[in-house]
Amino acid sequence: MYMKCQQAAQTLKELGHPTRLSVYRELVKSGRQGLSVGELQKRLAIPSSTLSHHLSALLSVDLIHQERQGRTLLCRARYENLDALIAFLTEECCQDDETPHVDKEDDAAS
Image 1 (cartoon, helix red, strand yellow):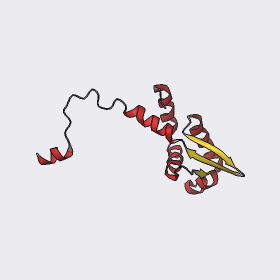
Image 2 (cartoon, helix red, strand yellow):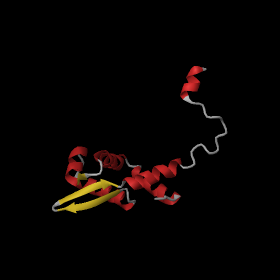
Image 3 (cartoon, one colour):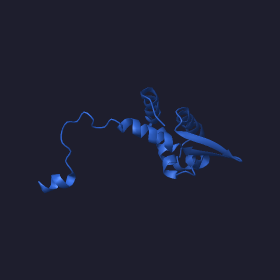
Image 4 (cartoon, helix red, strand yellow):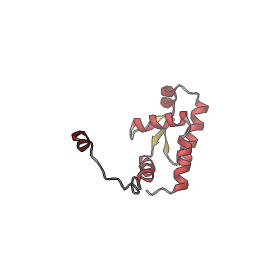
């Protein structure tokens, strides 16, 4: 998936809130099985209305996916979109850097 500048800016904006970033990190940490909303609430010790607000923001930029399994609402990180954001941020890394690359091993030997 390719990410455009406007989309990346909106995604970073939504991750810019400390609580929201904590929610997202818990979901990333949980792996592909994700976490229930109840488990997220327990782990982060935040009110359900606050959690709901932050989950909605993460959903709006497609960083997470929600799936109902019976009475349980599961949340999962969308790793492909996280990868796209990271790729956007690093795709042109150091392209204008004209200094020669020095390995740590080469630097330590000097």
